[in-house]
Each structure stands twice: as structure tokens, then as C-alpha cells.
View 1 (spheres, rainbow, N blue to C red):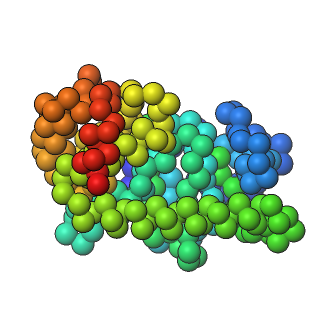
View 2: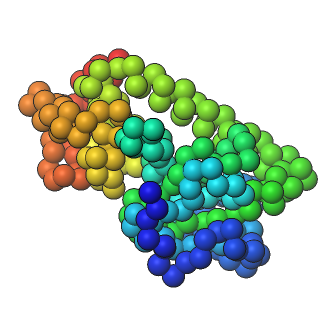
Length: 231
């Protein structure tokens, strides 16, 4: 399941890191972000285009400069399981093996900072701060996987409530959430059907926990109720 090639971009495997290439969005003032900004190259990907594929060599680390990304796996029965969503500032592509266990696609038009994994590992061997931050990043990814396992044993209402709270924590300082992903993306992430996601959003709106103003914009009306539903 391969999307069309990115606009104005080449695949990362053909890139050589450029010391003078900086992301167009300022990065956080920490050693890892600074190193990625200095060592990496920014690539533009069109909506729905593939960034990397499952079982491809995990040679690069990626950071979202603009847009949003989903990782996913196609199951043996043809269903798609979305593994995660990555928003501006998020780092993805971190693997515990030499190959990618999931594929990654641009949800929207994206700019992605791409950095050679072995270059960062070499820097971590010389810079304790970068090594510590890479270890923290690995721990955060493990924690995300653990939370996902717990999410999938909950009922539909708990899953949707938890997802909305997660998106609010990650991307919204207020109560309005702008979702870059489709209902189908959300369903494939939560292990539900798209019809169940839509019905659950409607039920949450009926009890005044949320307000669905558009298909992509949701207002949190009662965070306490959502937190209670999430358990």
C-alpha cells in the first residue's frame, strides 16, 4: 500500500546530512533538537505520501516540522491498524531493531526533518546530554506503547474519551481540538469501526461532554466527565 511520491522531495535514503540545513520552524532549545536541526535535512511530503515503509531499514530519525503523520500496519486480513499520530515537534521512526516495524505516511502536507540515525548515535557517544535525551525519547516511546495496550482493552466510549483528552494535551492549550486526522484514522487507531467512532462522538455530545462543531473541530465542554469516562 504505497502512496504517490512526495512533492519536491527525494526519499531520505538518498540524502547526505547537511550541516547548514535547518528546519523552518524553530526547535526547542535542547541538545537533541539542536543536533537534529544542524545535522538533518528538511523534506516536503504531500498528503498521504509514504515517508517510510514497514520492514525498510531504520536508517533515519524524523521530526515533524509542520503537518502531521500517522504510522500504521496492514494486518493479514487486510485491515489497517494505526500505531500512532505525530504532530509538530514530535520525533518518530525510533526503532528497537534495524528495520521499521510500521509504515509512516503524511496525513497532511508535511515538512519533516530527517537525520541519519548512526550520526545521532555517534554524537550521543560524545555528548552525554544528547545520549540522555535519546534515552528519554526511547522511554517515552515505550510508555506510549504501554498506554496503547491499555487503551485497547477499554470500551468504545472510554477509548474515544481518552483519545480526545490525549489530543487536547498534545495540541491544544484550550478546549478546542483541531483534528488533522479523519474519522477512519481515529477508528483504525482505536481499534473501532468508523460508525462506532461517529456514534460515540454523538453520544458524548448528547451528554454535553463535547461539542462537534465540524468533522475536524471538537470543543471539550466537560473535561471532568471525559476524564471520568476514561477511567
